[in-house]
Each structure stands twice: as C-alpha cells, then as structure tokens.
Image (cartoon, rainbow, N blue to C red; front, side, top):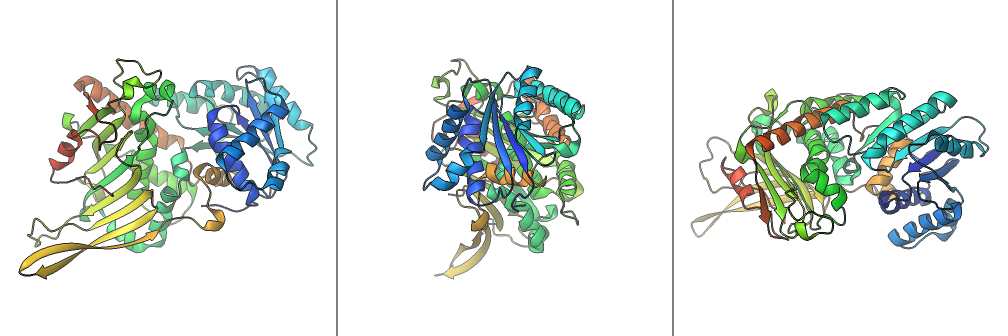
Length: 475
C-alpha cells in the first residue's frame, strides 16, 4: 500500500463531475488527502460534465459535498482547496470541448509538462467517447494523459475486449489504471501483506489441508435508487464478476518472490483463468428480495437476481477438488463481508460432532483476522468443545487511514498498480461470467423470492450441505 505524499505536480480531471460518484466518493476523498498533507505538490482539480454550471457554482457543489460527508471541517484547508477547483462544461462526444478543456488548463503557468489524470466517473456507455477524444487530444498535443477507468469494464467478454482495443490504440498499458473500488478497502488490501509477511498463513492455505473456502458479502440495503443500473446487470455482474472474484484470487494465488504489481496481477490471472463452474444445476442459487419489484423504476415482472450463491473449483493441483462457495446479496439480515477457510480433520479424528479449525478474515464490519482452534473439555463425563479464538485488527495505520477511493487515488498518483486490475484478469472474469449466464439460460435457473432482512433463499443451504459443509455465519 503506497501512501507516500505526492511530490510531482498534476492535473486531476474528473469526467462526470456533476454526478453522484464524484459528489459522494471522489470529492470527499480528495479533501481527505489534502488535509492529511498527501497532496504535497502543485495541483489542480478540473471538473468536466454536461451540466451547465459556472465555475463558482461547481465550487459550491464541491464544498457542499465535503460538508455533507465530513465532520469537523478544516475551514482554512477547505478554502485553499477550493481555490484549486475549476470547471468546464462540455459534451463527451465533442472533440472541440476536449480541446477547450486542455486550453483552459494551459492558461495555468506550469514550469514544465505535467501529468493529466482523466478519471472516468461516467456511465460505461460514455467510455468509448472519452477514450477516443482523449486519445485524439493526446495524439494532437503530445500531452501526458493517464486514464483511471472504473468498473464495469464492459458488459460481457466481447465488449470488454472492444474496450481494451479502443484504449490500446492511443494509450500504453502503463497509462491505464483499471479501478475496482473494492480493492481499495482496508480489509481487502490487507490480504496480500498478511500472506506476504506471515509464512504461517501460506502454510495454512494449502489446498490439500482445506475442506472448503467460503466468501460472503451481505448487504442490509436494497438497490438504493440504482434501479436504472442494477436491474440491467443484477448481482452477478455487479458483485461477482469483479469484487468477489478478485477476493478469491487474492486468498488463493501464489505469493510471488518479488512483490510488485506485474507479478501480483500475473498470479491473480493464473487463478482466475483456472476457475471452473461444475456444470450442475443445483450449484448456483439465484434470489430476489420480496420488495424488489416495488422499488422505483423496477419493472413489475423483473427477474433480476439480488442474491447469488454458487460453488466453484480451481483447476490447479494445489486446489484440486477443494470446493469454493461464494455468496452475495442485498436486503439481508446483516451487513458483513468475510472469508472463511475451513480445514480438514485428521483421518483419526472420528468424532463427527467435533468442530473444525477455521481461518476467518473479517472484512466488514470489523476488519480482523480470526483463527478458531478447538479446545476439548471433559465435564461430568460429557465431552464438549469450545473455540479458542485469537484475533487482531487489520485496520490501517491511523496516520494514513483513508476510505477506499482516497487510498486508490493516492496509489494511482504514486503510479502504484498493486491494487488495480489488468485487462487479462478482466477478460478471465468475463469468461467465467459469460459461461454462467449461458448455463443459467440453458437450464432456465429460477430466481427465488426471499424475505427482506432474511438470510436469503433457504436453497443456499442445500448447495453446501450436499457435500457435508455448512455456511459459516460470522454473527
């Protein structure tokens, strides 16, 4: 995790600067970095959007975002930051508006050419216009432009490849940052350093000792006014295709000897390219919370799943026949995210009631690692088992504890791609996702209605219990 202060000057251009992502996540994250002295450089923030705001109106919009999302405002720092905020109104498909933007930036006196970072805070439909027009500006002016493109990367494997080809016409691989905000979360970013620095964890994460692996992400909220987006993609494309598969890759990948972004991306790719769905109808469960179709802008006949549970395997020697269970859902009975590695019992342990050892990485709400050991006690001739639980926090250094977007922006400005994706990883995630959709369509996989604030469809238990396993509930 690269949290060094930024020393080199830059211009940060937010395309889609009048939208919710910029208002809710990006502006507060920039403020956090600024007041913590991480932006120790000459810099400018430019907003670009279709909204016909004046520069003063945009600064007020930026300021309101900070005041809505942060407490105990540093008034002096906020005033200084607002003086670095600028705005250009333009159309995403008009090359003239891009030249107008870069002409405005040139009016600022910099002693030499500086990096321009273009952040795509826009719907995926706009990506192509941004890429082509920024590419044309780069070709015409020889500007040093870097792109930060946020998921979703395409809507299937074919569109993801087209996106890759569009970008690669104008930009080198080093100029492209593919961002999945889940990789900015503290708990997720802790997985590799924990494995890298603690050999005992890697000794434990050997497939021949593992009974199963479980990855769970539960949300208490529903779609939260995102019907226009969510009903088109559903839980599989929204959560599984990137977030969940990236977590799976981080927990199962080989640890490279040299810890650098290229090696890490290669090892994640090796896992993602080996993932296999077992081709059994009962190994994927889809659900929809009961009030989903009453949400604003959701069609009354929508079958879009808001819950998924499935089984996967990794076709590698180390993980041969180790089942991996993944589930995610909305409007469930808790908000939590965790990874469970359950270990096999030794052959001579005959007591079927004895619990198993578990390694639990809790990502939310508490960022902790738990190791559950079994303690057997004799009490009046009865044999009982108690867990001995050891745990510690995974939280970041309080001097550099930022939210996911702030952490990733800082790493990107430091040109550190450790927690960013590569196009080969994305293509492999789509390979599996596309296959699942074809399989579900062929099998006519049902979408099961489940109660709001429940644990999801009961059928998820059949999925895992058929092989003698049970879902681990962290709370």
